[in-house]
Amino acid sequence: MADLTIRISDRMLKTAVTVLMVVLASWGVSHLWASGVLLPKYQIQMFLPNESGLRAGALVTLNGMRVGNVSRVEFAKGATDSDRSIKVTLNIQNSVRDFIRGDSKATLIPRGLLGEHYVDIQRGFGGPPVEAGGEIGVVPTKQVSLTDVLNVLTQKRGCGSEEKNSAENMSQATPAKNRTTQ
Picture 1 (tube, helix red, strand yellow):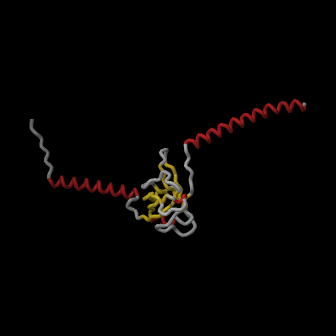
Picture 2: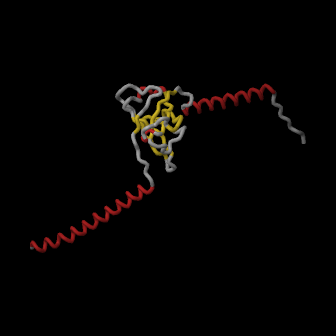
């Protein structure tokens, strides 16, 4: 049998590699742009009583829309108030700067069962916009544990049985009253 040899010129090989590199670079830039890494940002801060599962890189939303991420979570230097012991620095897109005002509030929202959190900022309408390096207020939240959920379920079950017992007592008492009035 005859051997079949395919020859690719150096020029065609260089062209194919160049096209592949351009496609990969375009995909990489579009991916970075979509993630918000390349958008201009400014930093604001918030203070928490404890770390609460918030990590650097966590999502920051404004009324549910992605607007940035958490850049740092660290101990607040010189903190004298236990409600302000953790300093969180947020990277926020410049395009939403005017929507984060003096009356805006940040809330930690749990994401999934593993306890990871993200920051949701409620849009403000009063006061001047929070400037770079400024502080946003935080709505205090309570961590709910499995024990808390079980306690609530136990209490609800107990309430249901009490209502059932009082309904049975009422039905038994009603015929007795009817007999005495007849």
